[in-house]
Image 1: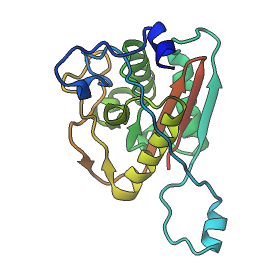
Image 2: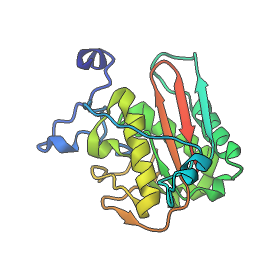
Image 3: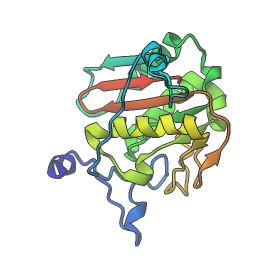
Image 4: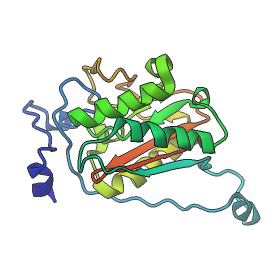
Length: 211
């Protein structure tokens, strides 16, 4: 798997002293992703079922989601498709972009992915994006390939539970071409809604929330 990502020229080429800096989503110095081994699980049930078994408080509720498959390029993301699944997720939730409090981004730390994702978010949220707290879990974990969406969904649910937006610990030189707001430390603030973003090679695009 590592060799395949290497042949795609997608892996980080960070040559700094601290290897923990290598995955730096939305940073001007980013040079590629860092692959990890990870796993996660999420139990999804109807609200009526949860109430029937005595659940008083749940971690999160899925408001809506958007899915798309693009055929334009095997690896390069399409900003229009990314925008479309974001808008679909929000619309199906019966809300508007102004109702979104924070974003759990895909944020791979690759040159093209981050600027494309940020461009799609800017299309949806406009100037407000510069003031929205954006989390990119891969700065802490690296990229778990197919597992990353599940792991980051857990993080998004816990953001709602604890009112804490996880930090982007490696982004010390934010890329002005991305223009997203990240923090080196956890942001404690009331959070009602989180937009979760994921996409992948082969034209796979998904968004979920608000919760």
